[in-house]
Length: 199
Length: 199
DNA sequence: GAATGATATGAGCATTCGCTCAGTTTTTAT
DNA sequence: ATAAAAACTGAGCGAATGCTCATATCATTC
View 1 (tube, rainbow over the protein chains, first blue to last red):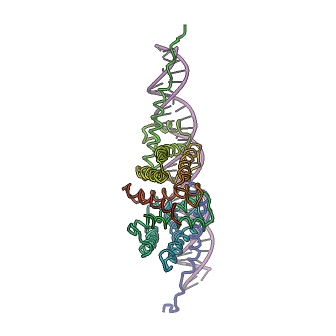
View 2 (view 1 turned 45 degrees about the vertical axis):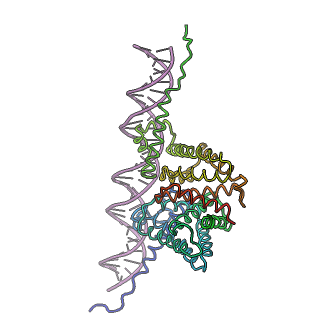
View 3 (view 1 turned 45 degrees about the horizontal axis):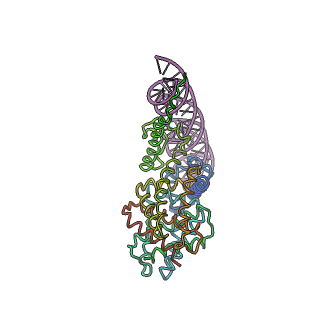
């Protein structure tokens, strides 16, 4: 007769695989922020992660997929922060918190963030990167639909413009090594509020 | 006796070389805007320009130098436009014209302009690219030193912030295919003036 | 301890790419 | 016509890179 004991759940082995995947993504991040796209080869990433090149291709079908995974990881961090900003009672307060979240995110790893902003625009979007991009845009849309933040333009245009202002200013600041978050956030806020209210 | 007629100036032969150089730079531009960095190989550029790879390396010591030359060419176009903006009597009018110049420049070849913006930030700056970058920044500095455009921040910070706002908004607009220059310029102007006057 | 599946390895293949150089063609000068 | 200078050519070298695959190790189950 067959065994009737409950089958032990067979997940724990995958922890190792997850660790490998995480190590690869983080290695990709470090290589990118140190040498830019120039040093970003799959062989280099694998070596940096302390695994073989074969393992890399066991988890990522291509170099692009690895880059996408990194973009998704970073964007999810930002989304988590940004979502909590929406809890603020007023649109204005939420905007302030959103801007601070963006500044903090971008200045945490400035070189990496800037590079990924660009890659995101250039890379062929796969399902996952499209999802996080859309999720982030939804946050902007819901923010700029609040009564105290409406402007002349439709929310979609406002969202795109404001995101561009935020990204542009923070990227430039990161590029020239600005590190005082509170000052930068204040100037970005001035620009965004100015855009929203100026007529 | 030797010939005493004035030696004919021996420059005209260089016209051919200049044409080759111009063809190479333009070929680089076209390849970049069609396929991005991916298709941008020296062999491809030479073929597109209708010259041999050897000729390319007769005029440009490296692939990077070719890219730099393209950046310089494009930036000079923008600088020429931007300089005329300074002739306006008021700072405010000059700013409007500067913004329109930037919008026109960026939307003339949107994909190319966006790509070069990024490359400019990533490339090791040679003498020429540094020069045009500095020249463009001087235009901003002199603009934001005008009495009717002063703000809380020092002119240098204002210049950097405003340039970032302009570039960021226009790049994003170009990326999503926006083509109506007057609308875009108006929104950028709102953002910049808002930034300058908001408190 | 034997069998099975999951995970890891790294030599090396195929391709691409930046660049060189020995030689040819074109232009200019006399 | 001739020679020198300027400009151009393109086969191909060496290095790097994305990725495969045959093999090896480890974990789990019975």
